[in-house]
Amino acid sequence: MTVSTIAPLETADGDTSDDSQLVQRARAGDVEARDRLIGRHLRDVYAVTFRVLGERDLAEDAAQDAFVNALGALPRFRGESSFRTWLLRVAVNSARSLSRRRVRRREVSIVAAEDLPGGEENPATRAVLLSEVARVRDALEQLPEKQRLSVTLRTQQGLSHAEIAELIGSTEGAVRVNYHLGIKRLRELLK
Amino acid sequence: MNSATCERVRDQLPDMLAGRLTLEAAQPVLAHLAACAECAEEARLIRMLRQEAVPVPAGLEARIRAAAAVRPARWRFAVPRPALIAATIGAALLGGATLLRQYRAPAPAAQAPAPAAAPAPAPVGPTAAAPVDARALMQPLPGSVDGGPFSSSASLDDLSVEELQTLLKEMQS
Ligand SMILES: [Zn+2]
Image (spheres, rainbow over the protein chains, first blue to last red):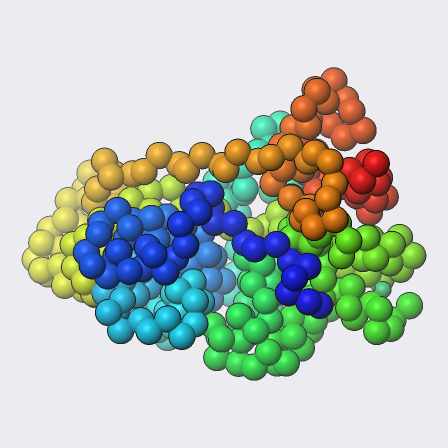
């Protein structure tokens, strides 16, 4: 697959200034730039911490830690990888460090209506979607962490295998294998 | 069927279903999906996964902005203990979890208005280099309120392989 066939990811806020400009400004103490970095990367950071931890409250704490730590460490950010990749790696580490302080819940995950992506107004359709989403989430919970992260970061966050490898401390080849193993297992679980 | 083609197609499915492939790149993938049940099944799973994506909890952005403004690092653990305990007891007395959650988001006033989705360009005429824009496809199609080929709530995630192919053909013609 060649890179040129893939359109660049658009940020959540449709903001066109690139991260490196915002990083430079945030480093110089620009509050607006810092807040924009938070706004445009929060969805991905929270997705990462939620996938590692599996519960909302802890995932929120870890997301907060990730931003506070990463923004506090901006002076040491050298720009060797993209800011996004670097930030998401901090998020993985923040979540893993919270995870070590407690035992992962193994019970069936509860999907609340507010955990659903918006847009489905019809209550009956929404109920069906909710149970479908709950099944998928429960199946994801049963995957080992590396498979779960490889599958969700690839299909939901749109990261490449190489980017995921950088985040979780693995190799591109291993992420690819974990991705395909995870997909295979999900297909069995959701039959 | 399980071949080098299947492998390549499966590697591309997440990007295609997110609308990140160009028309040119998407066509062989769609053609393969029409012929290969296994890969079509995998495409269905990835669509389900995309629906499962967790949304960001309300109030989290404001809470993080406030935290980033307060301390450079580890502020959660730097709150003086007696204050934390008093606040926790107070919150518990006054109504438990909801208040506790509010306490953890200290600056609701700083809540930014949800960023408006970027005005998605309508999927006008095809240029070979134009990516299939999923967001644009997820918007109600102009003039399709009373039922074009796809209903006004059409999104890539709802479409079957056949419908995706029809849509691509229409965009090209
Ligand atoms: Zn195939």
